[in-house]
Length: 94
Image (cartoon, rainbow, N blue to C red; front, side, top):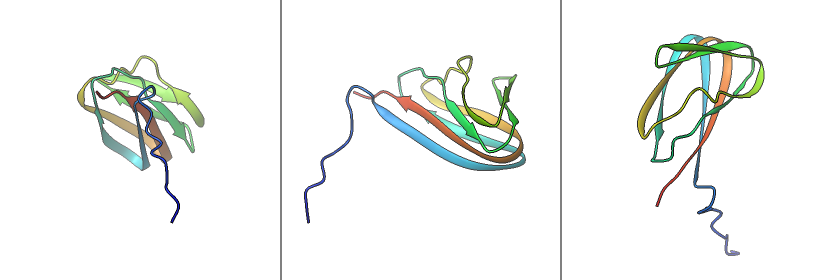
């Protein structure tokens, strides 16, 4: 069996990837490390996401919401709509 090189990058950190199905309202906990980051959402249909009491519109396709700043620890986001959403964000670790 050939040796597989570890693709972890100390420059880019850890990449988190979640995919959820939304049917009505779905709350997702995004666990983040030290680095404060904004998530990117890829939606199969237009929907909304609520974070810390503020609602943001997400069109169909890929959108980064720079006003959502994931802090270290648990970060809850609530999606409203119907479809699937892929959530991506990078975290840092030492």
